[in-house]
Each structure stands twice: as C-alpha cells, then as structure tokens.
Length: 219
Ligand code: SF4
Image (cartoon, rainbow, N blue to C red; front, side, top):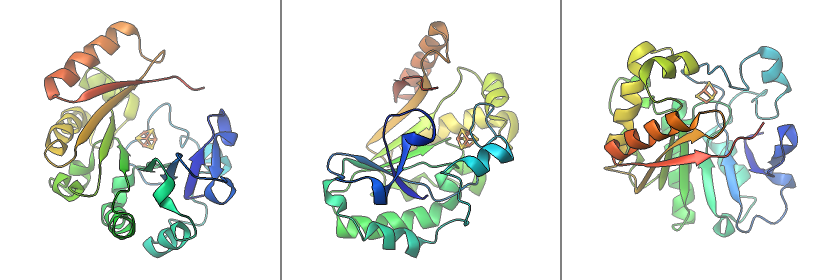
C-alpha cells in the first residue's frame, strides 16, 4: 500500500488504502515509497520481519516506481486534499530523486498542493552532501523526528547506521532546510518523553529557530 489516508484508529485499521478512502476532501494523503531507512529505531514497527510482513505499509511487491505512484494519483482529484505527506514505512529521502519527480509532476498539475515531508533528518549523511536545496519549491513543511534531547540517547533510540554524529547532522539538516522550506518542525511524542526532556527539546528547537510539535501518543 503506497497511497493511503489515516483513520485515527489504532493498529492496522489506522491506515486506509486511498482506493477505499472515499471522499478525500480535507484529508491528508500519505505516500509510502520505500521500506529503506538508515535507522532501526527501537520503537519502529519495522523492527522484526514478522511485523514488517504483517504490516499493510510494508511494500511487499517492492518499491513503486514514480510512474506507478503518479498513475495511482491520477485516479483522484488531489486539489481537494489538505496535505500530501511523504512518510511511510521507511525514510522517504532514501528515494530523494524519485520523491522530487513525483512532487514536480503533481505540483505541475496542482500548483496549490501542500506537501509535507516526514523525515529522520539524516539525508545529508545518506548522500554525503547537502541535499536541502532540492527541497526548495517542492516541500512546504519538513517534519523531523527529534526523538531525544541529546546525541547518545538519540543514537540509542534510533540505532542510526551513521553512529554518534547522527544527532548533530539531524539538527544541522533542520537549520539548512530553513533556507528552502517555509515551515520546519521538529517532533517528539508526549508520554513517551517525560516533561523535563520535552522542555529540553523545546529549548533546542528555539536555539535552532524551528517549531517543536509535541505529537500525541498512539499505542
Ligand atoms: S526513522 Fe522512522 S522508519 Fe526509520 S527506523 Fe526510525 S521510526 Fe522506523
């Protein structure tokens, strides 16, 4: 399932294939183009093979091509949706060029389309260069999972393949992205993170000049 809406229900019922989503007016439509990720977060649903295979977001048939994503999008009127969100079961920027190609085609058709990218913020480490200029004119909101108020805890939680430098790189990504993206947000999850740590994250975000969004806990 690579194009879906979110119902608000917990578990598998929480994701609804776009073909079964009914009227899309005012809804967010999510795009899931890859299973790949540089992290292996302790809380991630991708953690075990069984969980992966049982999850409707796991791309069993492999990653959809740009053409397949656009062909499915073409079946719907995306001018009525609230936001198109690149997220998914992996890190969307693992397919940077393809994500850009999809957005370019859709923004040509829908110039007012609002696009959000949910990311772990490690794309500059994945590519070994600053990729944030490529977000310009394509992404309206970048939402980066901050996860922790310091580097050691971030690494323990995300188990990033890039090691301890990941945290600083993620923060740098947020600052660089501000030059090209109107709205840069960092997120933490309430209840999962104690209040004192949330406050530390808040002051980190203030220092970086980005907004902290405390997301509700969903189990
Ligand atoms: S960054 Fe996201 S997709 Fe990647 S392992 Fe962590 S929670 Fe899962």
